[in-house]
Length: 275
Image 1: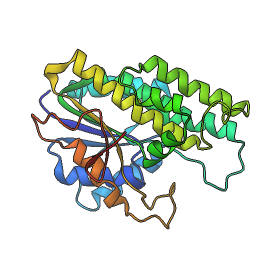
Image 2 (image 1 turned 120 degrees about the vertical axis):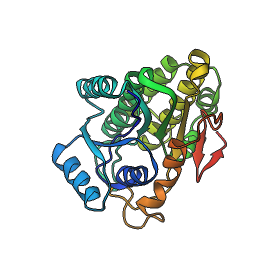
Image 3 (image 1 turned 135 degrees about the horizontal axis):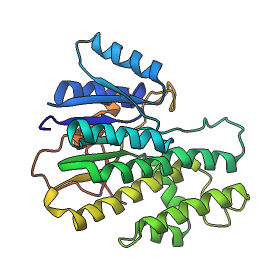
């Protein structure tokens, strides 16, 4: 049970794959690449193995509660828990996509917010003392926040917002988007942005709970923006390579033992950003 382990969700390509690659070079424990699709995940592991790296593979679909619980049980039984968890899995519709906005809101939040929340709620109890949790968010979370009504901004920035309230607000956004009244409700026209606002606020809430409920365990949990990265999601014109995008998530994952900050923060380019 002394072996340490890092798990990266949605890591068969793009930023996730670059994070696994970097961790394999820097992290002393076992590194798990995970993906929804076994074939693509196995191929990604073989690609890294051809570079002399030694990641492991675990099938994990964050939108499938059974898959999430099976992974949780596997890591708990094999390693006694998880030392590093990087919640990278996510999706976004292309700008030119003609899918109705209400549908985009439902689908995007299902993966980016609600499934990430499920991952956290299943895995946080098995994060070992000294553990590190990194939720990959986006600068769009901050941009979307600033486009919300003053009332919504106040709640999303408050230090007493609860997980239940946050979930209610995310559900309200989806419902109002489907009803075509989200603008009247104070929401911007970005399902991806609001999904990531949810991830950043959720990170703040979970960090606060860890300090209250497990202060001695010195677990650090943060949200981060990897930057505008050349991936299938962001496209070829983005300014950063996947390897550059991996720098901040890996930095947060490898914060040294005994560190007390950052915690509950939104971090970009290894710097805490205002929220």
